[in-house]
Length: 375
Image (cartoon, rainbow, N blue to C red; front, top):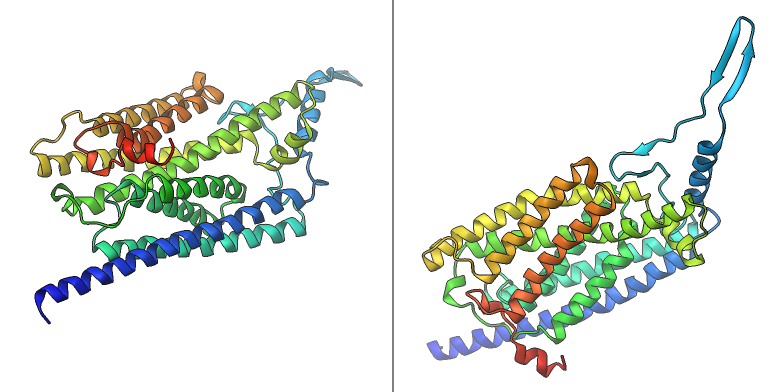
C-alpha cells in the first residue's frame, strides 16, 4: 500500500469515527429528553400530602415570636419562663426551617419516576461520553479544539459532577430537572450554531498544556454551573420563606415546587461550598494558561480578551467568597454576586469566543456562522 493510499484510508477511518461521534451525541440528546420527562413526572406525581413543612415551621416560629412571656408562681418567689428564641442559620441569614422532602415529595410513585430519571441520566451520560471519546479518536487529540467540542465536553462533565454527588450519597436529586434542561439547551446550541467538522489543531495548540489547562477550565465551569443553579434556587426559596414568614400566601406552583426543595439556608450553604471548593482550581487554570502562553507566544500575559475575562471571572468569584465570609454580605447580596461571577464565566465561555477577536480566535465560530443560523 502506498503512502497516499494509507493516508486516504486513515482519513476515511477518522471521518467514520466523527460520524459515529455525531450519532452518539444525537442519541444522548434523545435519552436526555426522556430523562427530562421522567424528572417532570417525578415533580408532578410526587405526593403533595407531605409538602408544607416550610410553612409549618415558619408558622410555629412566628407564633413563638408573638407569644408573651409565661409567669409561673412558686412558693418562695416567682419564676419567669422566657418565650423560646428563634434559631437563625448564620450561613444564609435565613430562618431555620427543615429541608423539603425532594422532588418526589416522599412518595413511592414519585420516587419511582425519580429513579427512572436517574437511570436515563446515567445512560445518556455514558452515550455522550462515548461521543466525546470518538470525537477525540477521530482527530487523534484532546476534543477541546473548538467551541463545539468544548460544549459537548462541558455538558458531559456537568452531568458527571451531578452523578458523582449522587454516588457520594449527597441529596442533590432536586438538581436533576434544572441540570438536564440546560444540558439539552447546551447540546442543542452545540449541534446547530457551534458545530464544527473534525479537524486538526492550529500549531499553537499542539502542547500537553491543552490537556491540563483546558480540562481544568471545563471542570471548573461545570462545578461553577452547579453552584449557579443552586444559587438561583436559593433566591426563589428564600423569597418563598420570607413570604410565608410575613403571613403571605404563595401560589399553588410555589407551594408544590419550592417547598420540596432544601431550605434556603441549605441551598446557600451548598452553593458556597461548591464555589469555594473549585475556586483554587480556577486559580490554577489561569496560572496554567499563563505558562502555556509563555511557551506558545513568548509572553505569559498580554491582556488578550480571553485572559482578561478569565481574570475578571477570578476577581468576581474572589469578591463573592470574601463577601460570603463577611457578616454583612451573607444571603441574597452574596447570591447576587455569585450570579454576576458566573455571568462573567459565561461571557468568557461564549461571548469572548464568538464576538471578540484575539489570540484565542482559533476557537471562534465567527459571526458568519451565527448569521447563517438565523441569529
